[in-house]
Image (tube, rainbow, N blue to C red; front, top):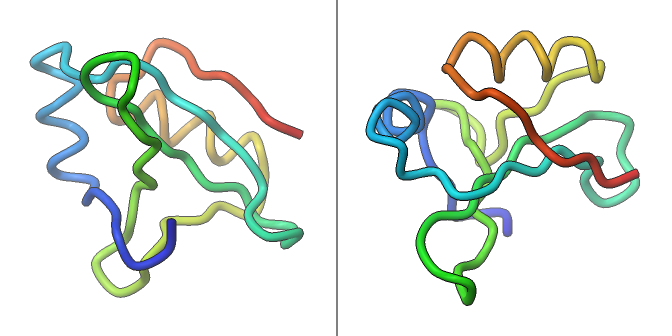
Length: 82
């Protein structure tokens, strides 16, 4: 998962074009931070994490912060993996 990812600007465009199939918020590798990943396309599509300009993952310190970020890019909902 780390090393690949989709930038926030591209995510916004995909959301506007209704191309995002699923969204998942999960903790990564036992760390306390949360990460948002999306899935595009058909049933065999893989999860792609949202990345920042400088880091391979765009993490948030709290679940509330992930929710605010998701809302800011236009996402209507997501699944959560605890």
